[in-house]
Length: 393
Image 1 (cartoon, rainbow, N blue to C red):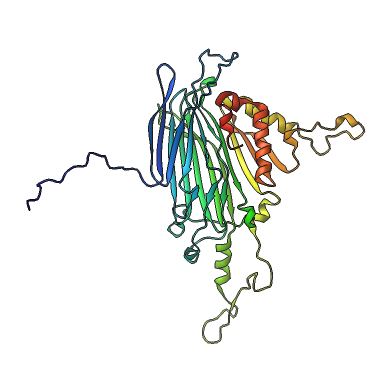
Image 2 (cartoon, rainbow, N blue to C red):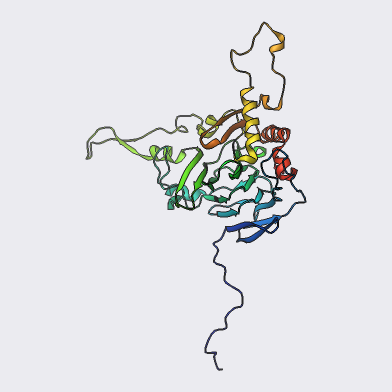
């Protein structure tokens, strides 16, 4: 049988995307039509866009009479609704000038499944630290997720996902990087609203901060296209580590009590909590007590200026020790959403005009009602992006 001299070329282009990699570009086409000019993804990641019927109204007090563009919704999904050990999700999003995007997770909380315990013995860590995280080969089974967002001039992103739920013995690390236009000033600046929160696990199964490791890092950079220089504006990091590998490594070390070698030396092992009849200490639970969920909210830019000012006003209005006049009954503060006794929170203005909100609540439902109530009461997100932007709340 005669063989063809040249192989038949497939009419379909081969995918160069890595598993779990996605790329999104949102552009504004004339006259004012937001369009996803690029949308690619690969298993186990899935990106689903949606153009809502909501159309924002121009602010009469704004300096410009141009109506802001209609926001585009982007849903981040993973097959199975969670991340398996070794899953690496990498999403790159670029918002061209004057575009708006809402990013959320319609599947509910992101599940972080258990890391295979057979790799525990291969860990090589320093007590209280992680070497080369997350590139260390010894923790290659860790679930990882990275988000890289470039926000153009007058563009805005509203990122309000559901919280992550780390299962028992799971390991997870995520990095979320946001880059804004350094040359933009005033109302020309980029805007961002970012929510990052994590729960104690599956409470229905009795989990209470029983995962091994969870790390979340959020960074905001300013990039100058003319000079090519990048400047760090904000970096916020949360690390929840049970440090059990470091403790186990210490327990396995043999101590030379005699201080000499040979047949007369005596080697002993340090007593572990179980050997001493004590209950092992859950370090993460002790550090987060009494909270079942902790989170961070980052606000910046003209679109979210009023929301940031609202949070600052609510925080400064909280009663302080020694501030109440006990001789007057009228000095008692009026009850409000922000004074929920099951929520501990703080708000601060940091460099470059950012408002950083940190909170902890006894459980997910309490945090959801508290944060969702504040965002709806202020109204900026619903007014600028529609009620669907608050889907997770």
